[in-house]
Amino acid sequence: MQNKYDIEFQPGQRQRKDQITRFVLGFGAILLLLVVASVFVWQREGLLDNWFSNTEVTQPDANEDPDAWTHTGDTAFLICGHDNARQNLHFVLVLEVDVAQRQFLITPLDPQALAYYRGREITLEEAFVQGGVRGLQNAAEALTTMQIDRYIAASESEFIRYINTMGRVSVQLEQGIDFAGDFRLRMVQGDNPLQGDMLMRYFRYLGIHGNFAQQGVLFAQVLATYLVPRNATTPAVLEARFRSLGDILNTDITVADFFAQRDMLMDLMAEHEQIVIETR
Image (cartoon, rainbow, N blue to C red; front, side):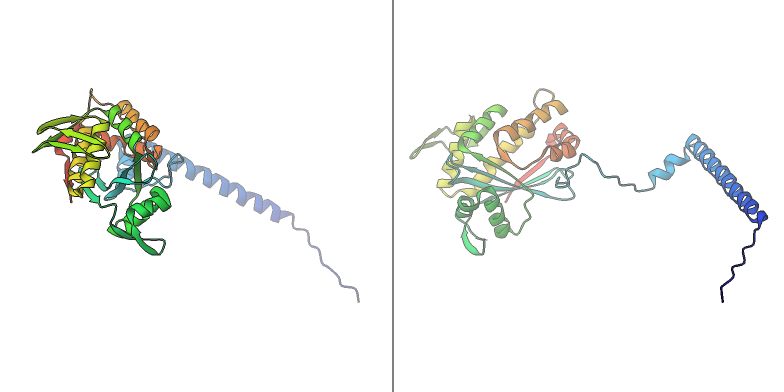
């Protein structure tokens, strides 16, 4: 038996659907107009600004480096100087920075200190020879149990060049130095304004005598010198200093890092007398 299909035409059904559609669209348009009018009134009365000020809104920056460090607490830097063959370490420092608290903490490390690297215990210097700055960073993290976020490394010639672009560093000595070895170092009692070559020799001299704590004090003097603004420092001057850092030294501090912290650094340098620099 053949199936029969009953087809019933209902001309009034389409008309009712059209009426419902027009009602919904009309109601939506009226609701949209009410929202727009309300926003206009809130903005005029200042209510919209108050609402946004109490609402936390986070929008990603398309230009932001996802690896950029932020000062949510301390940011630790590895800073090292080595010979021009990129082998022997003249000094190794960990610099912990909290710009918001205006605090700098310097921890000098002995290049011959033992640390675990690639599953075995070797000196920091050996880790540097085998793995470069990254290897040294990993070994320093194992030794200090600190997370190190960025590094600044310099060969002897690079360090000298950078110091000379920044100006002399005033070093105070309680007694003079007259040293003759692989290099010559003469310094007088009292104030010694040092340029890059002499400053690097002094770092090496302290390392030869195992005076790593004094290396930290010396770096604190360098840091204090460069945190003092010269010639009415502006954002442009600060940017020029940063670019010279990247052009001369080996560092993984990025442009995004710099611009993320530029204004805070400007504020820091404007009141450099409130900066606290300590050594361990």
